[in-house]
Length: 493
Ligand code: BES
Ligand code: MN
Ligand code: ZN
Image (cartoon, rainbow, N blue to C red; front, side, top):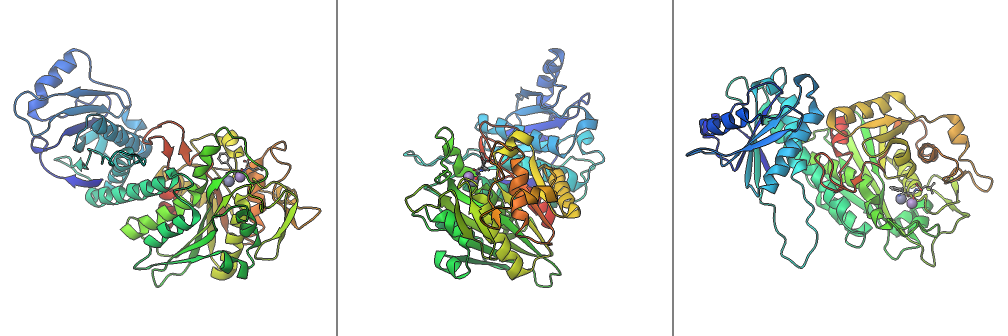
């Protein structure tokens, strides 16, 4: 969807839906044609005064705006970036429900007060773009494009904050990158296989972004025995994808690694049938990495460092050739691993990606995103991801990037005692601690990964709880959320 700013007087704003955003207690400003309706609403006591409270008005006589939504942002002191995003999301949803073709959001003087263009424009544009997202499911019907074609922020006539136009444009692009990741996440396992994911990544190449992918033969040459073990139970071949953004005079290199299980049945340690279909989302870590490169390509994110996206991608199926519980496999750095549970496969494909990246690119820091454990849902639920790492400063940088951009994370510990628990009698490491019974499964997953990054500052984001929603929530329609794209863009841009 096109997103822009308009600077015309309120009464000349031509749109299908004008949204007047105001704070509790403030008299909303409306074009003259809406004054009579506003008066009636007021005398009926219908002017909303709570966060997201709204009331729809129609004009008397000629008007450039077809209808107007009064939208209350609640108490001024509680209005933060997340609330702005959600209010913009409400506006987009309302426009779609009304089948409006265009939407203009008009923030009042008090909404704008003490906010920079960036503080206002970025969350509003993101919320509009993300709120308007709908997955186009494959169907016998011709794809019906969304009626809503353009949305914008109508600059206040007096005192538009500086930099609003640039921020709105950047927020719209960032939102589009998130929606790109959501589209990948929502695709069924047979529609997005490892090879198709590689083809999607390849489309992001060009300019300063280079693409490369290893097939299974090349992975075997690099001795990536862990990812190959996961892949061997499936007919679909695995890939190791690389997207390399090099701005030229970069001082640092950062590797961004994303788990790309296009479907996770659990392997021989088969998952229960109910809900197994959700494991199409097991590539949402990789979608976040590709989303970051989408943002780089569109100019929404301009990293000064060299950024290398690394996506190990595979299926995890219980075929006749599948890896079995108890099998010993060897990762590319020589580490031997006892595969006690074939359903703990994310860490197996990631360990080869991490070890290879560390050795080849010698990064200054690593961040990985993975739908790694069901345990993180028990620990933290669906609003917040876990951040676990070996370097508190880097972990906190990631957490604060998530805080300001809307992808929130919470730190869990990783101590030597956790690392010890991953040692095996039959190999260097085992891929689970004691399975689900032991508890703390998200920490065990991270503890396993930590062996493959050595001393390189590294943060692991377990996004199993935040990568998708069963129902719509805030500015998310149900399905993949694109979690991590905004965090990465904030952290690296
Ligand atoms: N992809 C799953 C994790 C997952 C589960 C994500 C539910 C989202 C919802 C992962 O590969 C997995 O199966 N993990 C196991 C680990 C266990 C065997 C130690 C899990 O969480 O049960
Ligand atoms: Mn699994
Ligand atoms: Zn998995």
